[in-house]
Image (cartoon, rainbow, N blue to C red; front, side, top):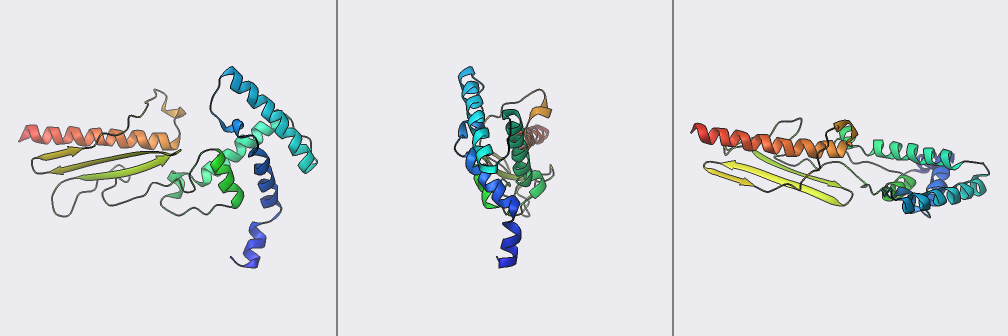
Length: 203
């Protein structure tokens, strides 16, 4: 990176966000998903402490409510930048503070799904050139957990590795992009299985 590029990247906003994330790193409980009364109480206390640190660091008053909103907006911003549906298979370049913040929310430095031969893309299963049948392979990582599946159809042979169960929700609007993708993958596997069974019954 040249000096000019570094000066643009490390401008006032860069140092502001870096200092802000540094404050949040001292209060990781704010990023825990637990909604137990004890956890909610600790989060409220952490917000109050973080707001005071923010005031001392930036010389600006901020309420716990405003701080919570700021944290949420920053989360949306970083998540959007690393969203697999928007980034495709491109390597994501993150600023130092974005990497630190992504670690706080248990994200990956690159949340893309690796597209390898046989992977389903745009809802279509690839077919091998040798006529051996359909081949589907996919790997998705989220918050340290991975889901992998493989379906290979050959003449008279069917192989299937069971996918880690995905919790299905009636209201898909509440699912994250990653959860929706996992659900689509599982359903595509089921469709492939049904098609294979139909072909076998026809024969």
